[in-house]
Each structure stands twice: as C-alpha cells, then as structure tokens.
Length: 212
Image 1: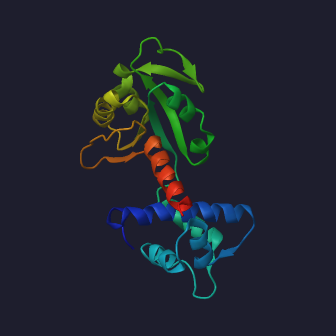
Image 2: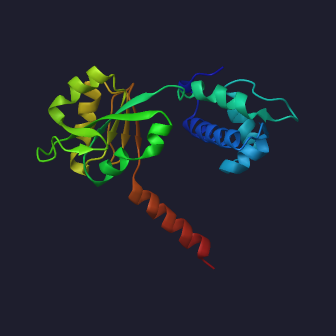
Image 3: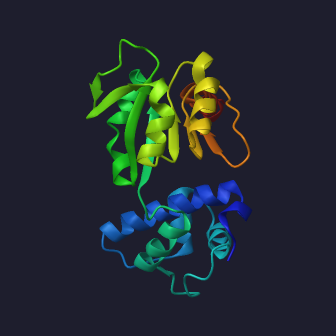
C-alpha cells in the first residue's frame, strides 16, 4: 500500500470526494456502490476510480461493487480524517468571521480553537465563543493547545508574515485565503483558496460554453 506522500495530489483530492460520497450513501441507507456510480458523482471515469483506489489496496470485488460502509471506514484513517484537528485562524475580518461560524468544519473534525488578529482594537472581542488573541500569543497558544493547522485570512501584504509566524509556532499545515502566494519550508503543507480566481475561471467557462 502506498503512502500519502507518494500519491499524486489529484488522486488524494478525489479520494476525499469518494469519502464524501460514501458518507452520503451511508446516510441514505445504500449498502454498495459501483466504480461507475462513484465516478459519475464526482465527474470521473470508472477506470479512474479503480485506479485511484488501487493506490490504497483492494476494497471491492469485480461485478459486486464496493461495500459503502467498509469503504468509508477504510478511507477515513487513510486520509487522516478519523481524528480531530485543532486549527488556529489568523484574521478577525469578514472572511475570518465567516470561517469561525462555518459549521461543516466542526462536522468534519476541524476545530478552530484559537483566533488571532494584529489589530489591538479587536483584541478581546468574542466571535463564535472564541476570544480574539494578539499575535504575540500565537507561539504559546499553538504549543499549549496542540494546534497543527493554521488558516490565513488577512490582507495580501500581511499573508507571508503570518505564514512565517505560523510555521515558527509549529503549525504543520496552512490554508491560505489571502489572494497571494505564500512560501513555507519543506515539511509544511500549504493550500491556497483565491475566491476571485475561482470566479474569473468560472466566468471564462460560462463565456466559452455560451459562445456560438
């Protein structure tokens, strides 16, 4: 069985989607699912589904499909989603406020346990039961609470500095909502979400699809 480090990122991204489909099917009381059905649900071919799952082992039987419950229970630990992850959020602005109250994070095991901001006027304010803390307490709080992941929701000009502080504090994974690239050392994972870029790409796709 391959390790996650040896598996291409697109495969891991699809595995997360397979897991979500299994969870949905289990809620609906469906016992088995075929590779064709899994593929159709996420826009992949049945051959792609089988190839992806083969990275992790043998899950189903040819012609019989995959037992939904067994597949879901196997995928969760493989993707490290069978545990709770503690998260630090930096940026008590509009995006930060929305992320603090995003219920799906908690439902999927991601607990935002600390909120930071560099604006002294926000210090001590409470959002979603979290008190806004000063950046000066970041390193100590990360260590005390065992925080492993960090979310950046600050203006562009502050993003790299925040990333550096999160890494220095011991955070091992960073989700960046600032519309800029941030650099982290080897051994620290980073993912960026640029909502403007997503809308720009969507606009292009809509224009192309409606062109004569």
